[in-house]
Length: 348
Image (tube, rainbow, N blue to C red; front, side, top):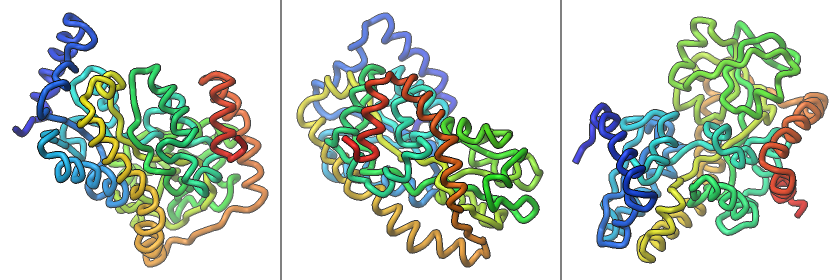
């Protein structure tokens, strides 16, 4: 059955009301029975070849290895839900799983901020095994997510290549100082905080609106991953990439914790197996194959000047980010925050 977005949103409130009346396990009790429809979403379009590689593979794995376990219905490109609608829909029980970029939901799920903390992401990017399934950091994240009734199946075994500063020919950014006073598209809350010292006017707009925003001068520059650049053909607008590792993210599949716990063993084992495929393939394939062999050569062919960050800027960003890390530790709790950073940095 094909679900239209307007019909889905119309009736989604009924499911949430039913859960409130019938009790917290009413919508999940069917997991004890035979094959179930398993509905998932991602707002990411297929034009994001790298970011959609993992979700496509995960869903294909479920369909090929568990057709007798799940009837998987998966909607990409925001067909069913927009980015900001996914988490509320999952919590309401209107969908069964979602793929989400961690940077989008750190305000709702602060523990995921560890994947984007300035001054930490470089180490985490260089050491992806620290975010592997079953690693101490992965388990700590899920312990905290569990308090929000959520479970992350896999983090893709690492974060994606950090987000850099991209700018056009009329507003070149070759240093941190060049950012001063500019209107910059930033999604990450952590990066927004770190750049406050440079009087940046942070603009949070969807990636789908970035191309036009650059044309109209709504923004002067943007902080983004190379997947977004290619996925939205922004190399047609940019002239410079200042490769200062400002923030980062991964894309992860999430389910409700109570869904996870109420599943039969066959269903959970299938999802764990799909998670292991995702762990083995997602971040490594994106970073090493798609980015390294395809996307960065494409940037060079487009004539974009790649500028390596100066030592002074690396140090300045690290100093600016210290207050961001301190604030994050306070938000998630001192014990949890300090342990997460230590695990990410390889100090625990």
